[in-house]
Length: 406
Ligand code: AMP
View 1 (cartoon, rainbow, N blue to C red):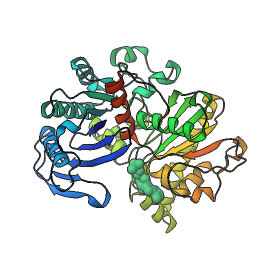
View 2: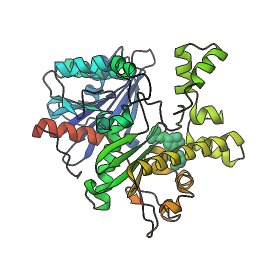
View 3: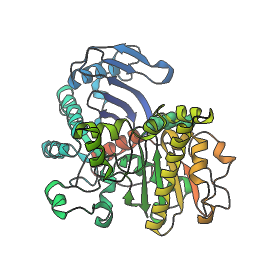
View 4: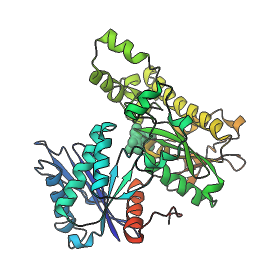
């Protein structure tokens, strides 16, 4: 079955066409700056990628460009739209309504729209992607896969904020988490890699990239995660500050005369690695600068690793132990030095990274020493495959089965 996976942002449309049975990616690409005069389309895999300037006034126009590229031209992947069996949409906020992926109907669309209050840019963008698919491919089955649904199992003691209870009742202010599809994928894959049933494992999953989140997964069930009402909470990230003393917000608003929009922008786009180093949000550049002796870059690097270390400690306490720590995303998968720093000093907790194995590159691998009580595993994430698999299961088999991944 071929599933078209759509990840629509406010001015972008990212896609992959996946054959679920073989896990082969048949085509992928992205339309960027949709709605502006500088819109362009990248389509193709690795060296075959083509970049074409294309006018795209909205997501519907972008979808038409995508479908044209999939079915014709030099990087064509299929003969006709009949070769797309179903469509899987990434949706950021599923709120309290969705604890799993669902087939999209009018009621689901209405709920995604209602939840846009909690993720205005993201949910509205997903709806634009859904509408564009409905217009271009009427009748094609569609599934919504939510970033938050994996975390609906978190208990109230972890998802509530100690604010007046009425705020929860009035505005549904609570922790929802994010990156759920990635945490679900790497936890399932880690269990398969370790050849242990996920129901027997206490896992801490670390998605460390430009965005960062860490989750506690107790016997296959998410019990806590670092992102909150929004993806600003938790760890220090590329440009996001993560958790800070909340009193800082009114303080800087008053001192700097900032509006809510401006202070939000400061915390989301000007903080994190970029804010501290003053150099970049990209860890590679910060690492280079720190190794060249830049003190602020060194500080930023140390803060990033310390922030991850602290969440790992918290979640060991939350679960009363851990069997394996799983790493993914740009930094988690690739940065030997950051991994070394995160696990430095954790030997008393039975966590020992193997310096030689830590140098290995490649696919799924273990980087802890043979005598480490806690295993450390690197699993490259694959959110698109997870979305395609949920879509396949709901459309072809009529139900979602949490089975071991192929
Ligand atoms: P992601 O958001 O998952 O795409 O991850 C992006 C982050 O991963 C950026 O901060 C990159 O600098 C970082 N990254 C990717 N490859 C490496 C690498 N080999 N060493 C250090 N950081 C890396």
